[in-house]
Length: 288
Image 1: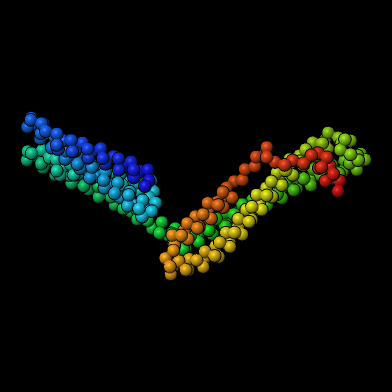
Image 2: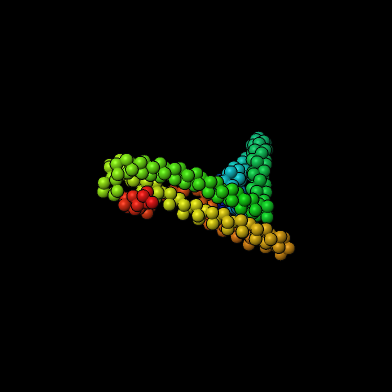
């Protein structure tokens, strides 16, 4: 049961308790008895409205229908004028003029309720249709296809970054090679400050390049698995039409999305966790 359903279950109990108190708490004063009855009716009607909303939310929970926040807002808004309409219908002034005013007000509140309820009905219909589509084979396959598009985009972005990093490494390496040949430098100890700065840049860029290569490999593996799962699930969905096992397949697709969706996010590299080569290793690497 969702949190908002529990909230309305509790809220329904409060006016219900107050109504029972007003109905059964005796008072010798006739005027007070009449007021208690009217109050009891008000609390009872409030309870009916809250129970209506609670029942709707409970039904959605049982049927596992995901309701948007906007739909819930209009469900609640529909209950407010409904409550006032009920109050005007059932708790009215005993005078003829008071009864006439109550009827007019009741019709006004009823009209507002119908308008809000129409909007609520449309939003609810939209939520249910979306859910039916998501749980259908087409909806499930669409989820996997969207994820594959995201994974391919991520691989493309990483490849572009690798290309830039590799270009930088070659650029700094060529500068070091030229200076080595021009000054006949044979060891890292003889390297100039400029060469050492370039080596430090290569160390950092190489470390990032190595790390994103790992991310790329994991992403490529994820893409391959989703392609395999897509083909397997296509066959399973055909079977599901026969055996009615669509819910299980939906859970399997959701598990796949949960596993690989993070790979579509912007990758973040922690500099503290990078494996950085020593300056001497980079020097030997350039000399090869």
